[in-house]
Length: 282
Image (tube, rainbow, N blue to C red; front, side, top):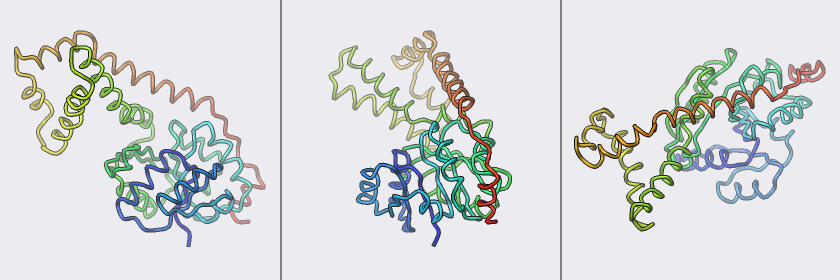
């Protein structure tokens, strides 16, 4: 039976599978990676089926997840070109910054492409995934992909032109970076390390969870937390004067520029005629 195959056994694959198992997803999951230690670890932790051979992994897929580094995608697709690719292959790229137009060049139009940008937080079932589909991706397969990612968190379908902006905004690195920064600042004003970590984690994680679960508008929560003339209001005012919002926006713009620059530098060779015949099953 053809099923879900991950090409690449790194962090995002591990997070996705952990989230799927947490959601009681019990269908077979196949993983291919050139590193046998990664495969054995995933097999031991999550009971995946390991595929040491790339050709076998591709031919056993109905839904193929490309989960390798962006700079490895072109070479991977060039290798896959030479295989007898299943006609009903739906392929989802998890690689940041590579547009559908380049992915189609890698394997040809008979392969239906989608892009997904899942958060590593999906490991605990609270992820967030952006999806975008090529025009030829059929509606039934789209529903299948949405349902799969919905098992590990919230799903948003957005235009591909918004993907780079989404990628630099939704990263859990923002939360970790803010947490580390707030802890360091708290220690600088007199808290010991343990108390600083607890206080900072409450400020960020618990406060945001209360906003997500309580249904209270963010503006109201800001007013509630920062009484005029109080300490919280003084902190926020000083941060705004220092250019807090402009600094965050500058960081996001730098991330978007890097994603677009990386995409421009990737070279995807056109599908050769012999490979195109193989894909079509001729």
